[in-house]
Image (cartoon, rainbow, N blue to C red; front, side, top):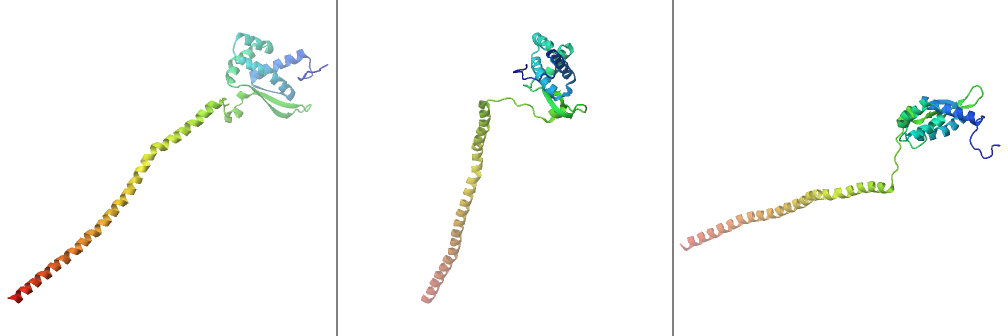
Length: 213
């Protein structure tokens, strides 16, 4: 009975199933992508991803653990030397399953399973994974531009006030000059009047003197 067994048996005994998944994992590591049925691809994903996580720490113990699953020295060497370097920064999700339609003979659903970092078409335009940031760092970054924005106008304010003061003083000088000019004109008008009066007095005196004679 299969009570409580949630994984897919794939129609095989345990020994046959483990051997098949081991061979598929070796092929995936060596060729970076393989075509198989959707059910086998899902089972292979759960089988190979923990082994790829083990390869991030290159130690003798981890190599022996991975070799107990893969049973291939070439696959283990490829996994620890090349694949581990390629996927070193990825926190998980090393494989991708893409459905490719139905098989012609028995109409089984087929899929391609591949290592994500070796697909140049999908990874070329994708953005690199962002590192997690704490709230403290984000608040400091937000405060930095605010401080710069408040400091900038303080230094620029005196430069803007200088021309305003000059503009206010300039009309005042013009007004003073405009007031003084009519005063000069008034004095200019008074001068000929005084001269005419002096001439009139002289003429009166001269006429008076002539009468006395």
